[in-house]
Image (cartoon, rainbow, N blue to C red; front, top):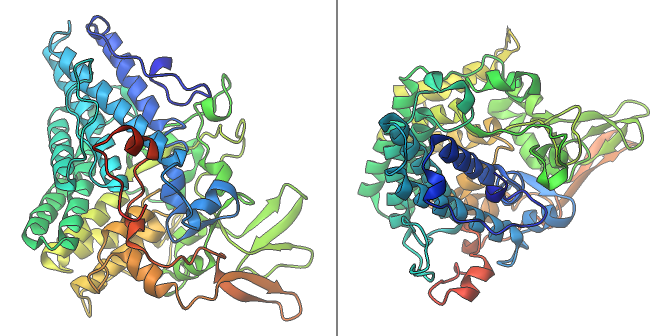
Length: 527
């Protein structure tokens, strides 16, 4: 498996898959495990993908280093956070293409070949879906690379990449097992529900893209597909919302969380390795109290007021009081009022990826969810809203999350209230969905994608709505606790993160290494 892992401190050049080593099911399964390891590794979801996705959004800020670079929009095409995901995705894509070629001649059953083909299509589609959302159109390769291959392909259009993505997910869904029929040894691998769910998200995202580019009829077709794929998962009865939102983030209940987590990357404390090369996750070291990744005060205010007043999810997802292990003092954050002897910090922290006993800073137990049933319900609500407005079906899907949010570990609260159609329009309900996703999925890597894909009432992206309008009234700077008046004074947004809107921020830059080596490669505008 080492040849497929991108987690090693010493980077190994990916070794081509051979026909000889692709004949037995055991060998093929080992190679597929290596592809999952690539996607979950340090050069992808363990570090290099989650960093730009979480820190480039509006609701987090970083205190130093790479975290500050992304939250202040100072990143460049030279950044490893673009080079490494690009290389990792293409390595997975090429391995998938190669195995697909050799699979038919393998000494394996028809059933094994069918399921494996679907799994490879899922992994290829997943890689291209990540790339098209991060970078826009990218070169499409659906055949294995060999000595006679054209190494210098131009970028395909966004539409062409989505056609490949959607074809891969649809074909994958046809041959993958249902979650409850999956072999125990394959737990964590993709399932029919994973392919259907991410297909629903891909159709929704593509519909957003078509809408923003004035292709209304194409967008409606995509929204209907998104709704139908979401329904296929809902009607399968394979998944459910866990009754207690907190159980999703309890590492002692991780296996049970996959009743709701439809697809995620699994991590485990790794006593055999450390730091970047370990099998553990690392997001917890950045989001924990005193970590570098912190919640913007204005966002926290929004998530504990209005619709979200007394919302149990806010109590679970955020930390505003903790024991500071540096000085062994109780520390509170904005907006909590400190008791006598307690220290203060200016920003709340995320409370989702908590491991009480990590082996080191990059060796946590916490899995990382890619898509949950909660998000699928929001996909259903959003797609239905784009087709028919806030009708009964859209509101029913949306309100399942509100119902769960009122459940405080068995005690039912009065808030947040369920929505009714009264006074709602398509535009206002879309914004409700955007805000709901903001709280429900905070810290799960979806916010930046939501900002750049969803339309604001003015027809622009939510990214432009936030950065060119809604964030402007906030005084630049973080709140400070006034010990005399015992109130928090000052700004509500981290310095230098209220960056003026530029269209270039709707995509990340193509890695300089790709533009430099490939004469047919073009850079994204503005970089």
